[in-house]
Amino acid sequence: MLACLVSICFLVLFAIRLFSDQATVIVADTPYIRDAHSFELAGRVPVYIREAQIESAYAEKGWHLIWYDEFTDSGLDTDKWRTEDWASFKNEELQYYTPANVQVGDGRLRLISRKETYHDRRFTSGAVHTQSKFSFRYGKAEIRAKLPKGKGIFPAFWMLPDQEDKWLPEIDILEMLGHEPHKIWMVQHWLNGNEKLVSNSSTYTGDDFSAGFHTFSIEWSPGQIIWLIDGKERFRSSESVPGMKMYLYLNTAIGGVWPGDPDQTTELPQAFEVDYVRVFQKKGGVDRCC
Image (cartoon, rainbow, N blue to C red; front, side, top):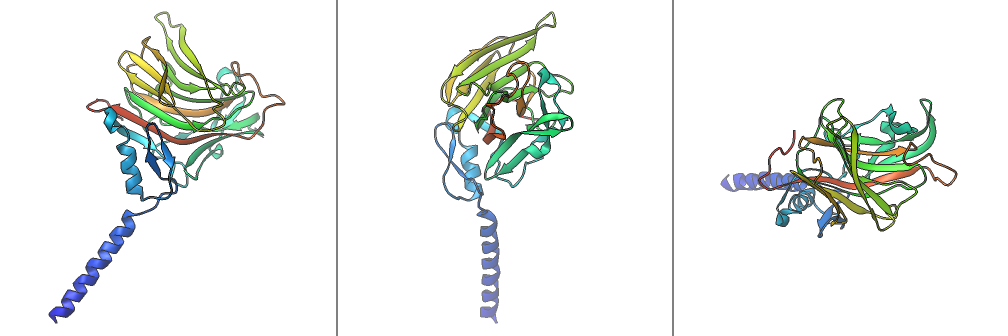
């Protein structure tokens, strides 16, 4: 009888361990391992290992990961992102943003831009943001992405105050005019004491940023913003540095005053492909998120 009870207990414990192991080693479609500045695809590894690697990525540099999306789900994580569904009226742009143009699969977020008539617009595109879902004050925001190109194509990764109907100040981590795929714009906008728009910007010319993936980030602290591309500083500013919590915005605009309209050389559809978005703060920092 005792031997029978021991056998039953052993079987129960084995089943529990098996179930636990199966739950623990769920395999991600796009796992990553760490190098100096980014995670590269490296075969299939357990999710808990991948997440531990992500969370410890900047530990030696004094950074603490507070928010991220690796886009390993089968669709957009709506606990983290909101999609736009409207005809943009800014800057004489031509696109209608639709949720259908926001796709997640194979470990990537894709904002698709198309030439198609939709709600009286000649183009559609995609935009996502974290307003009312995530914002932070001071830290490092980073994206690894491959950008769309072509005349009139205007991808951007930027930050805005997490307040209703408030546009400025604005931090543009990256902007690229599609007809200049080797040049990245790094920009600030704010209102001065006379309520006039003021901008501070710089550009970096390097690789064709539509040909492969690159990292774009800012390190934002009281009184200073540092822009980095592929881990190297490209611009810094101490002018009118925002001090309020801000949220993240990702989009591809089409046409408008600055990039100009698409022409016969513009190939569509185009995709703004995002490998990851991550936000860090210095260890011991405050205002982590809301």
